[in-house]
Length: 281
Image 1 (cartoon, helix red, strand yellow):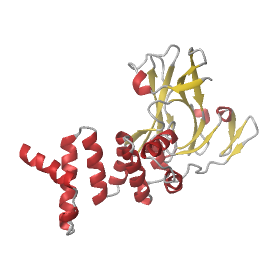
Image 2 (cartoon, one colour; image 1 turned 90 degrees about the vertical axis):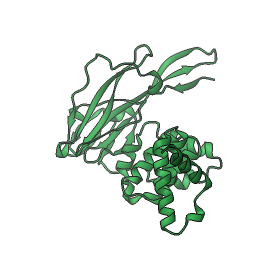
Image 3 (cartoon, helix red, strand yellow; image 1 turned 45 degrees about the vertical axis):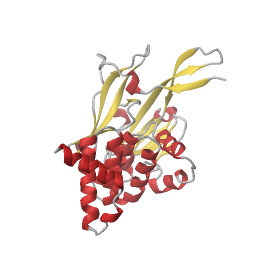
Image 4 (spheres, helix red, strand yellow; image 1 turned 120 degrees about the vertical axis):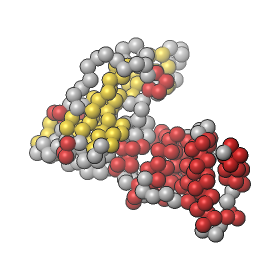
């Protein structure tokens, strides 16, 4: 049976390629989507990654392993919506263990106000035109841009039914094969989803995905520091061997617990790891 092994850009990324990047797309309020040229070591693979910028902040629209194409014709007349054509490359292994390069594409609907990926369609959906601020695909589908991306609370209802920690983390990571955590949080702001993002981060960390967990933890942290969040961030940083930073969070967590009269509930690992910092200092 044939199987596809999707290739991560992080393991294949070489130096920035010399081929021309698409020009930036400028949307409402001067917000932009820019394209950064990349070149994989796989033969015949050239692409760009898409980055959203608003109010001086820039983040990737898609995951690090996803290339993207877009141009100004795909920008709505009101400049609030943009279509992009993301693609991820992989190797198809057949029953004889021979491999060939394949790709998986989408047509995604991007909010130029927030950088949120509003909706996902098949690749052919990007063939069409804007009529007013509705997109008419050549296949007859009509899109009025609205948020279709599942909320973290609804996402968690499914994730929480998965029995093992590894499977939960795999499911979350798999659901973000195309979408970046930053774009997802642009759709569903952390301020309205503090507990949900903390739980998603915890499930990821529990399954060994600390780097991805920190993306969600940092989103919640930007809203305001919370006692349990500081412990979760510290634990992920510690496992990633970022111990100096982890110790700072352990110390802040310990101080917050003590101030709340809960010093006796501080886990032993926190005491041990902050004591180690004290000996260093």
